[in-house]
Image (cartoon, rainbow, N blue to C red; front, top):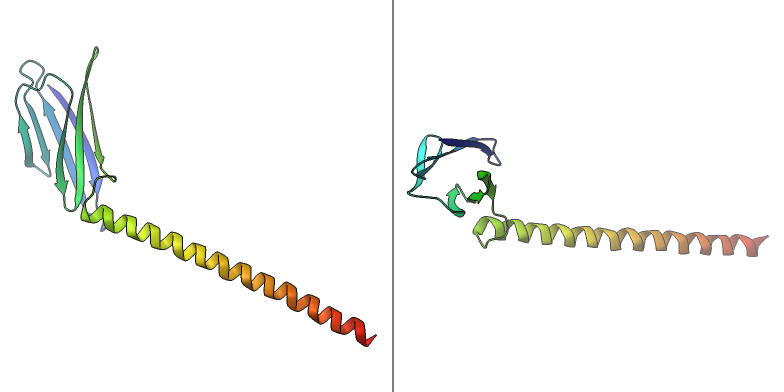
Length: 128
């Protein structure tokens, strides 16, 4: 029997332990999170992907069949349209906008200082 485990930690530091059992002969598959069964599927003999939520994160478990046997992966889907991913995207865009605004302000201040320096030098040259 194949077994895989993963650890996911939320933003507050709470750990989630995800486990997968996949029968060699019958292909029965069980996925659990913190000892709670999340899904069961029977006769899994080909590649397949399963999705479930851990809090607000969409977790995807992939079962991939190859000539050597099966391989397993577990990832958080950051692309699909969920409230959490919309929140992330809006904050990334807002952060980019604030960096861009800060760049314009810094550039304007730098240009102002250069012009002020040139102006003050021109006044000093006329006094001499």
